[in-house]
Length: 286
Image (cartoon, rainbow, N blue to C red; front, side, top):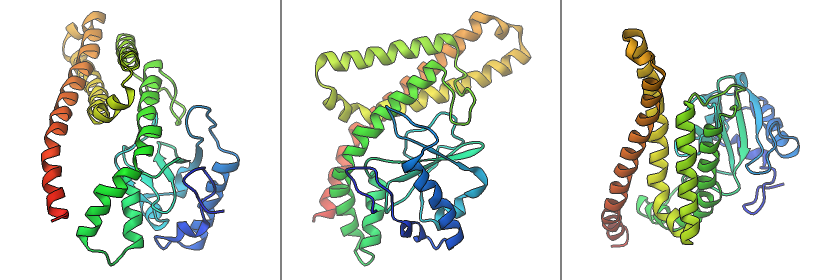
């Protein structure tokens, strides 16, 4: 049964020969593709079902041979080992790497990157200028459902799980944030969602705030990781950091500071991009 864009159906087995994978690897992997449709390892009523794949079955080179492309723009999963994920250009199969396993799910809509890659495969002789037209035109437009249905809700779900301290797919608690950070994050997230709802401009806000908010989220996580490292380092050198209150203050303030700086930087970049986009548009359509 071929894959469709309206519903999550079983991808074609031949899709996974794109990179030259041998039949043995392709068939071994395809068993998990079938399992993800019929009997996934992790079922969810709010997010996509996921299937766990043994870690030793796959590797970056094997994924490439199956036709997968590395992707660095994706909603992370709790406990994943790397921000690099793997998407397939011929279907919506998406793979995340964890410490002791890989997890696979089927996106409900194609991403911008994979739409462009798919077009390249279908038009191998097209000029780079034609590719840019498609990339900034139809591909950008067709990727909107992916950003709205999966991107934004996925980040909200990811941050919510961090705040609540839920376990990741690796089976261990990946949220090492202090209780004050969790509480402050929860209040901030709830306030943002409430403000967007009360104004009745959720979609408009989504379009203008998605990139800066994503940068803020990543800044928050980076700040918390740095603060945790500094706290541990200071505790080895000075008794000052051993104080519960000083440690809590460090773990609380640093993530919000880096989140704010990341948000403002992305906001400024986003405001500067229209000029560059117009210049690119004039070049493409001149």
